Amino acid sequence: MKILVTAKRVTDWDSKVVPTSDGTGIDFDNVDFKMNPFCEIAVEEAIRIADASDEDSEIVVVAIGDDEATQQVRQALAMGAHKGILIECEESELDSDYVAKLLVKVCEDEDIDLVLLGKQAVDGDSNQVGQLMAEYLGWPQATFAYKIKPNDGGDMEVQREVDGGVETVTLSLPAVITTDLRLNEPRYATLPNIMKAKRKPFETFEPDDLDIELGSPKVEVVGYSLPSERQAGQIVGSVQELMEKLSQEAKVI
Image (cartoon, rainbow, N blue to C red):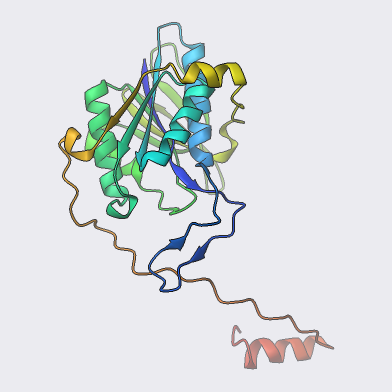
């Protein structure tokens, strides 16, 4: 089985992200970067599936972005992935649709059997790439997976959280699965595996190498701004006063 996973480079969720003075971008001077946490979960699940499989399995990890994204690919290789691919391009040129098309091309070139993606990236929170890939590939999909069980017949049983309960679906391969937070706890990369990762296959491409021409993205970022500051709370003396303020000032009732 050949599994594709992603390792997107995102801003560290502990860093304070602020827009530039003109609001056209983000000031990255004092911002750290990490692998998208949902991608880490996908990498961990791919390793578990590969380890439990009776057949030889290969995990291909892909990052799309500038050369700095190499760090996240190397992290996934140190966790246990077998091959790394970096597609170099400016993230400002991308939207979910272009990302999906680039990953679809990798799937076709690498003869992928299973795609495991984080359900979303914590920077854009678009939650679109997995669904777009399944549509373009014509493969079955399961989103928001919190339990994945390979069956003896070669298909995948996926439990996914839905409103009011759990839905269980069975997918025939090839398929696309997006992972939720409660699926697993990603492992830490050990020092010996970090050293081994440096010797694992690593390829770098540009969109032109994959016959993908980047044009105007379908989604355009108009600007960035900080949310309005939260106003101080008020102490009221009675329920009647509270109701009046909610009605007259907040105008929520």
